[in-house]
Image (cartoon, rainbow, N blue to C red; front, side):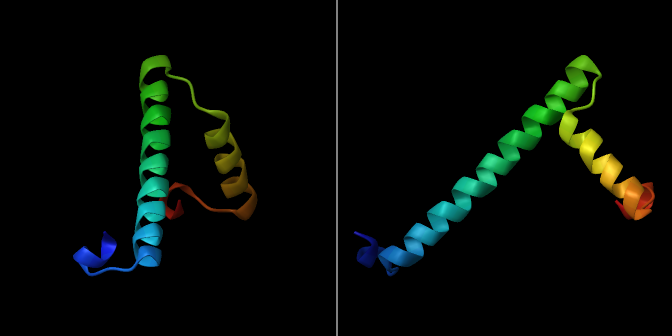
Amino acid sequence: MFEELGISFGTALIVLLALYFIIKWAVKNGIKEAYRDITGKITAEDIEAEQICNELGLNEEEK
């Protein structure tokens, strides 16, 4: 089937896995953004990321 398209099975598998993780990441970020918009609260992951940035001495522009 994949040979008709000119790609091997391994290449197709890698492409499909990459698409899976990209879509998973996009959906996760969309849900987090919608949660922040609806509730006005920040998530635990955002708090952890902010603490790490503060420890490293990064300011808002460098994030």
